[in-house]
Length: 376
Image 1: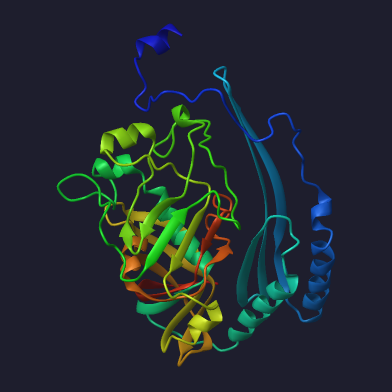
Image 2 (image 1 turned 90 degrees about the horizontal axis):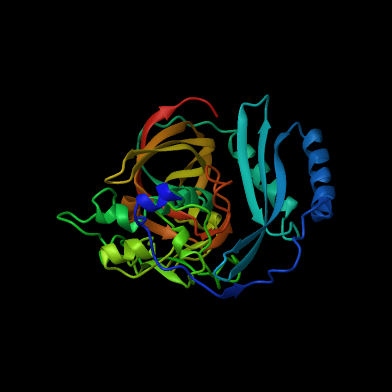
């Protein structure tokens, strides 16, 4: 205690919330159990049988968790949140494993998981791989499924701390000092927000964290979370703030939420509808091994995986090789050609970290496929 007192006030200090109660504090935790798979498991068994008959190998897992969090303090803080969530991830391989594809689905209770749709998606993509087309590295108009969009923009959220931007350490730092809040960064009506009241992606309406970080502060526990527009009409509106960083940057206190929702004005239709709009380009399945190259531009690198398809005249004409890519999600905001409808999706790289994200599939102009990569 004496050492703590001698250290002085914490950098993220702010007055603690007191006498606040949210949620049913006294109710017991309700654990998940095998009954959550009661309709999913038989359908999955039927898919296994069909796949064996057609020489398709399936690899994957289904999981469901129900986490209850309580936060209390001697100052009268009594906060509770419940977070049930599940997911299915499945890789399909055929023709002695020379063809490979992937499908992932997020769910709350598995009642909305369509095994029929998963099966059809895997079979369609494996069939496309019957025709092989070699393509060189280069810049391509690229169709990103919603899961790949989520992978890119989850990373963007993770570097959206206001203090880092204010101190010149991120892509959102303004030359000469300050942040890029107020700057237009997209060529389209791009909307990106967090909202605890968004019906499909319920989230806590209060700050609750066990440790302080650049994105959150234990001193903010119990502070209300409301809708925050990170981007509105393509303009950067907000960065992730603690109350301490908000005072430093002289911007509004905008705590990170538990969900993220993206849309593009006029965006409509499915991934298949976007394919019809591309004259010459690529359709991806997933990204993998995403890593930072340059924090100042948020240049990322990674690999494509489990199927890259060549699109000509609005149709998939075959599968091509995998690529290593180098591109920035912030730069890509200014190269959006088309967008589909917003949908709850599962990122692949960050599937265990982000399960509350709704985004559209996108067509990005001149996505940089820097080198050809071997393997599936």
